[in-house]
Image 1 (cartoon, rainbow, N blue to C red):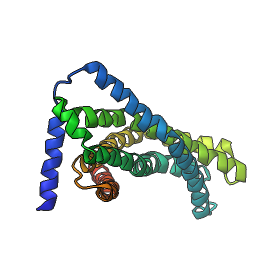
Image 2 (cartoon, rainbow, N blue to C red):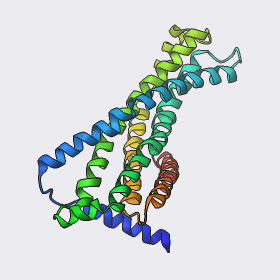
Image 3 (cartoon, rainbow, N blue to C red):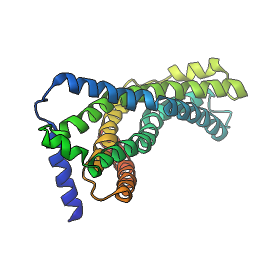
Image 4 (spheres, rainbow, N blue to C red):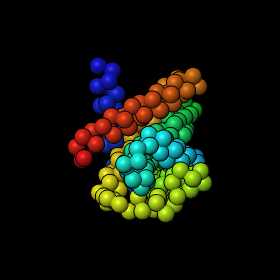
Amino acid sequence: MNIFTRFGEFLLMLKGMFTKPEQYKVYWKELMHQCVELGIGSLGIVSIISVFIGAVSTVQTSYQFISPIIPRSVIAQIVRDSVILEFAPTITCIVLAGVVGSKISSELGNMRVSEQIDALEIMGINTKAYLILPKIIAALITIPLLVIIAMTLGIWGGRFVGDLTGILPHQIYDKGLLDAFVPYNVTFALTKAYTFAFIVTAIPAYFGYTVKGGALEIGRASTTAVVTSCVMILLADYILAAVLL
């Protein structure tokens, strides 16, 4: 029953967000602040992970495809499709669930425990709309952009390492990138990115917003938020792949 209770509270939280803003200017400022925090603040870790994922994919794929019958350009095709379909959207959002999710949960949890949220509600402010909605919208704007950057850097990382180590010259790699390319894969990856962006922000926001207790409970809520977000990302990944592919 606890699961159903929490799910009902989560739906009520989402419902409470969609009210007319008191001051659009204040909400716009908060949205821009969250875009900087969630997007630019996560750009460094996403870039590093993407480059190394592409590099490792090239090395491991070339290790498995040692048959002289298979063209070497196939390595680039496999790296391209792996990065676009799975690594860029899924791995990036799982990392963001730990980076962004814990930050959101602990921030809202601290505001709840220190009674800042109660003070805002006494002032007549819809705290769900003011504190949570800008975070979700900012994630829906920035995380798909981060996924696109992750795709580009992942493919480039594979190209760079393949050329650097002599595994796959860049001429053959570039040819493989263009062979049998399916544009729908990018659409599918962005669909996953938008879905995961909602999960990464909405679930931690719920656990932080509803926390009760003190510092210990805030830590537990952050851990639960990250674990739940990762599990939901993997579940959504499977459902989207089964439905859309």
